[in-house]
Image (tube, rainbow over all chains, first blue to last red):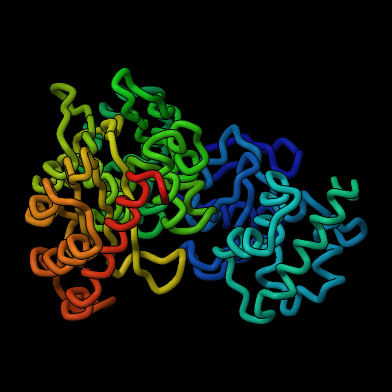
Length: 158
Length: 283
């Protein structure tokens, strides 16, 4: 066993991990149940989290790599009582069905809008191209991200 | 996998001494993508080289590009240095590789010595004449990537640390083409072609094809066919046909040799046409 410190959704953590443990397993152990295990091979995107603001596959990231870094999961963006504007946009446009892909989709969308507040539909499709959704057919997810982008440009963001 | 220890190497010396101490049961990692997907069952120690001083992208005195082994593919894709090198050829190649979250993890060093030597990045680097540098217990060594792949490179890097990749300056243009099942998938075939034109004639040509499914390789017969000729549509089409005859192709679970031989002419011709348009400045 080894101990690592890192920042999780703005809170400092100092936790014991196994040297070969994956970040996905650590985060779920810490209660971050938005981080989903889908394929465990880096293909589906449902385990996506932000490491220092950049999207990574937590299933293929060793937990030890979090040491000294900033990890953001969906819990760090919003809560059921206080939804993030992206979560609201997903709800309003019907971009959610089973919800399994939603945390990963919202985090890659958050990364996109952090760099590009006025994306084209094509840029949104490219941003979410590494995240699989088996329910929606993607069109409503693209609508949701474009709606959130519009609101961000009007100042409705955090 | 029975990983017992995870080390954070502070420099190349420390990484190398840890790797040697494990006597084949240690593995270097930066992104860690390949290791996490399926490390050897004998790996006991992971040696993280992310903070070992192998980051950074720079231009050298001859206007070439020097990329540290732990630079991520997304760092390359978004860097000003890569955009300024050969009209953004590397930026274009990186866009074709995997998806954003994987590009934020995977590194150039991993793409060269850990992933598949027939994948998109090795093909592009071989076309560019990339030279790689590494440290072993005796010295620093350098070799063209094309030559390194003819050696038992996986065995070399069980006892060595890749430090950087150097790309020479070229007075011309390169283009990359790939066929895959979807945008983020690995290639069924890939190719990278470069052309330099002087007085209306091809002064030099570089043609590399990968995922055949063998290691990426240059097609020197095709290059010789092009040099000294005017880069006409007919010549580039003929180069494509010759590429299919010269490339060593085979079957694997993704595609047949027959399919690959049928597709290579169009793929090579397209890459050459794009490079030729860019050289003339009307791309």
